[in-house]
Structure formats: structure tokens, C-alpha cells
Image (cartoon, rainbow, N blue to C red; front, top):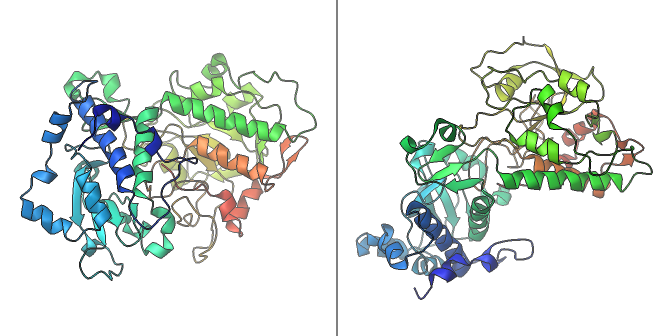
Length: 477
């Protein structure tokens, strides 16, 4: 490879963005994908060796895939699309532990894992490029490449296959390979995933319990960049509403929504995403932030309505009610879904089945060292069940395209089970929710009146009545 270390690390023009979209052609953009792949290999190499200098000779010597007997490699190459072979000719082979979710280059021919037809006579249709790290369980799959459509998807395990096939019914879950690699690099650059070469014995107990580790990689429940981007997303949403109002509340535009003292009174943990977010985002100069949900201008009322913030209930960060229903009588009965999401299924709770629970938008309740924890997440707890009729195959959907489970009170706007860029089960992010709500205002689906966003909380029922796309967040990381 006639490439310098500086060229490997300079991949700005290869990253996928709105201004630099992925190739929309039926072929692999092997040069772009190779550059993104090699960046990740170099990043891991430098982190593992605790160096800021990239040694290309050492990097090339750490190959395992290419050190197989040549007949093994040639047998695979003979059944690959030419663009995939060009990709192989252009990349460095990663060490095991390539990235948080994947252990390395696999290039496994995998038609037997899928039910789609293969009309090729001389090559496999499906190839597993990167293998899921075995730390995530059994029945692992990985990043799958479809040589017919030249798109990739990432089922961590075989149990995720229902989320990606039949392909013509799950096309939104298949992406150009450069899109997947860009998402991974984005998470590294923002600090959501970091590399730490230290062994467990070298970490303090606080470090051990502050993130989830797989080999070199650390998944953080939140990072500083997420605070900034979520604050910016809510401020944009606030601007969209205020720009449509005739008069605003007499509040300074730059007044933060909460002070630290006010959050202390509500028993918000001293160091967490929510405290940073609420003390930096500015106070909306209106009363209603979404249909039937109010801004917490009354700080004493905000503190009084927190019922999930007691210590010793099994979570490092408890769930707090951010935007409560304007009607206190619109409650949800405590049930197994609320128990599981707000406390964890094994924890004892001071509630009985059917006890009234205030509805509205809640922050996430998490253990920070759990796999895939997301402190920037949310629960929109509604006073009614979504898709109450199990036989109804229409209604609200989640990001992965699946229907919201029948009878759910909390799954509107959520990811669903399948995450096309890695992970599973984590909550959708507040930033994405505010961006979606901004689109609803700007498109006129939600209207603005004298007090803010018009309509009652029952407007969210529209997701079950033909408007699911309005209450759906596109798949992302």
C-alpha cells in the first residue's frame, strides 16, 4: 500500500454526511470504505500501544486474516464481487478487538445463515465482513454484506435476522458499508466510545463502574459532546415554537431551565447527564412544550412529583419526570413494563400493581456499567396503551420498523430491538426526540398557540391511527 500514516488518519472527505452522502450505486465504494476501515485499525493500534505515532510496518505485521494459507483466502476471494476483493487489497487487517461490537475481519461466506434467494452461479450472496465480538453472547453474526444489493447490515446475533429480512421488507435496515463505518468513527470522535488499554486491575472502582468495557473499548452512558448536542437540539426546538408565538413569558432568553440548587432539592444526582443538560439548556418562554406536556416552571412542583428518585432502588441514575402531563388525573397504572424500565425487573419497588404513576416525558434510569446503557435516553409514559388490540397490524412503529408492542405505555419514539449500527435494547436519545418534535412543528403537524404547543396528550394516539411516521424516529446509532 503506497499510503503514509498521515493519509490514513486524514479521512475527513471520506466520512458520510448530508453534504457528502454515501454512494448511491449498486457497487461497493471500496476506496472510501478502505480508508474508513484503515482509520479504525490505526486508531485501535495507537490506543493499544499508547502511541501517537502510527508505525505502518508494525501495523501490517499484525495481520491474521491474510496469514491464512493462501488456498483458504483464494477460495473465499473466488466467490467475492470484484469490489470486495479490491477492498481486501486496500486494507490493513485489524487485531482482534477491532471495535466495540466487532472482533475483527471475518470475510465468512454465509448464505446458509439467510433465507434470501441467490441467483449467482459462482459466488456467495452474503458475506460476513466483521464478526460480532463473542463477549456479547452466543449465536453471533456480524456486519453482513449483500453482494446483490451492495448494502450492509449489522445483526449482532442470529436472533436479529427477523429485523433485516426479507430484505425487500426491511430495506431501511441495510446501508452502504461506508455509512456503518462512519457511524462508528463518529462515536469515537464524540467520546461515546473510547479506547483504554489498561487492564481491569489498573482501574479505580469509579472507573470500573462508570462505563461498560469490551477488550480495549469503553462504552460511556453519556459524554460531553452529547450534553452539548442535546442542549442545542432543545434550544432549536424552543426557537421553532417561540418564533410562532405572539407573546412570550417574561423570562430572560438566556436563563437556564434549572439551577444546581433546584436540582439538589429534586434529588438529582450530583454528576449526571441530566444535571448538566438542565443547567445549560435555556428556559422556554412558554408553558407547553408538546401536546399535553408542560415546562417545569414551578420548581417546587417539579421536585414534589419525582417518585422514582429514591436511593437504593437498583439504579445509579434514577428516572426523573421532566415534562409532566398538564392534567394530573391522566396517570398510568403501575405495571410490569414500568417496573422493568424504571427500576429493573429484579429490584423491589415501593409500588403496587395499578398504583397511579404521573405521565409525561421521563429521563432514563440506568446502571452505568451495564452493556448499552444510555443516560441521554427517555421514556414517554402515556396515560393510555398503544396498539391495545393485539390483532391490529397497523399503528405506532419504532425506529427499526417493528410495531410498538401491543399494550405498551412507553415505546413511542423508541429504537426497537434492532440497532443497525451496533448495540441492542438501549433507549432512544433525547437529542433525536427534540429533532423529531422540531420537524413536527416546522411541518405544521403540531401547531403553536398562546401557551406553546397546542393539543392534549391524546394527540399521541395519532401514532395508532394512520400517522405513525409523524411519531417515528429514523434508525440511527
